[in-house]
Image 1 (tube, rainbow, N blue to C red):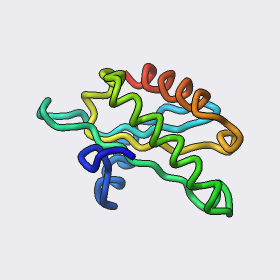
Image 2 (image 1 turned 180 degrees about the horizontal axis):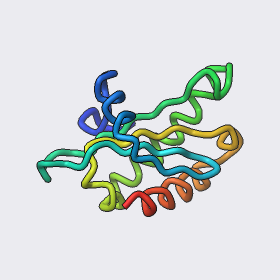
Image 3 (image 1 turned 30 degrees about the horizontal axis):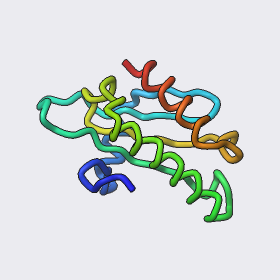
Amino acid sequence: MIPKKYRLKNQKAFDATYRNRHIVSDSLLTIYAGKPKKDANQLTRYGFVVSKKYHKRSVKRNRIKRLMRECVRLAIKNNKLTEVENYMSIILIPKEKTLGCKLCDIEKSFFKLIARLK
């Protein structure tokens, strides 16, 4: 589980990130990036969105959210997210192909998109 200090918590934060419209995408994930930081001491916060449109079964939606959270948690733990440290918030949204993927596939896609986000 990602520590609370790294989570996007309220609807206003999600809406502000969506409004910024800085988007990168591939066949597995879509990443929305928020505004650039004004203060370097702020932490980047992460949000995960899996709608009912993705899959009607909550078990499947929750599995994808767990995989995305684990990917981000490991990246934070190993300090691999230096590229996104200048954004206030990041939202991850899976695509339909993600349904049968494993953690390693999601990690590859995530790091590829993070590199393109610069």
